[in-house]
Each structure stands twice: as C-alpha cells, then as structure tokens.
Figure 1 (spheres, one colour):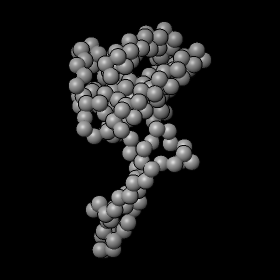
Figure 2: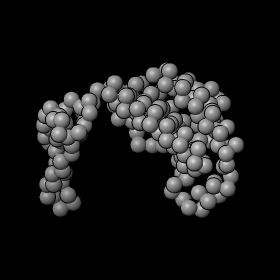
Figure 3: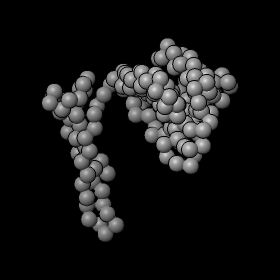
Figure 4: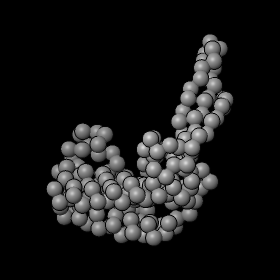
Length: 174
C-alpha cells in the first residue's frame, strides 16, 4: 500500500542534472505473519521531455562507442551496443506515445515498438527481430562464442549501416 510521499527540490549536491524534484516514497507492506514493513524509494521526478532526452542522449553516447568498438575490431560488442541504441530510441518513442514516462524493462525491439505509434515496414520489423539476437550475447557464453565466429568486419558493417539508417529515422520522428 502506498503510504507516504515527500517531494523536495533537488539540490546540486546530488549531481542529478535537469532534475526538478527528488521524491521519497514510502510503501507499507505487510509480511506473511502480519508485521508491517516500510520501504523507502527515491524516485526522480522528470518531465516527459527530460525522459525522452535521457533516452536520446544515452543512445547518442552509445552510438559514438560503437564507432570505437568497430575500429578496434570488437564487432560483437559493437552489435550489442547497436541493439542498445535502437532499444533506447524505441523507448524514447514509448515515453512520447504513452502517458507514463517509464518504459517497460524489456529488450525486445518489436515488443517496445508495438506499444508506440511508430509504423515500421515489414522489412524494418524483421530487422528488429534479427537485432534482438545481439542483446543476448553477454548472457550466455556458448552462444557468445558462436557469435564471435559469425560476425566479422563485413557482416558487422552491413548491420551497422542499417542500424544507422533506422537510428536517424527514429531520431527524426521524435
């Protein structure tokens, strides 16, 4: 049960740029033997525009990192970050198109897009489907080893060029 909410103006000592309020929310929960437990959560209260800016700015930083990864022949990590770029831009669209400012904590690009007003071609949806394989690469060693063998400079460059085209499209439509 929601119990208590206190919002205070953020102070600069918190190192949170562009934050208007820091809210301390206390939830009252009852455990299985009837004892009340209280949990405090600090919640940043950002505007919709600030949430969108966050997703866009972090996607831009990740895109710069991809260029360095590709130059250093770290192809699989570049593709992992390419998925992140698309995911973050899709989440920016999710925030734009929904009343709530926090997108779901999921990584499937098509699932995120389905909850936005974006109209993707079948080709783009298929590309997103294929990009989803790269968000798994850090989690499973056997899968990762197989992927390292498969994706070299040429294959990675082709994919990154497609990501760049979609990235620009997603940015333009925000």
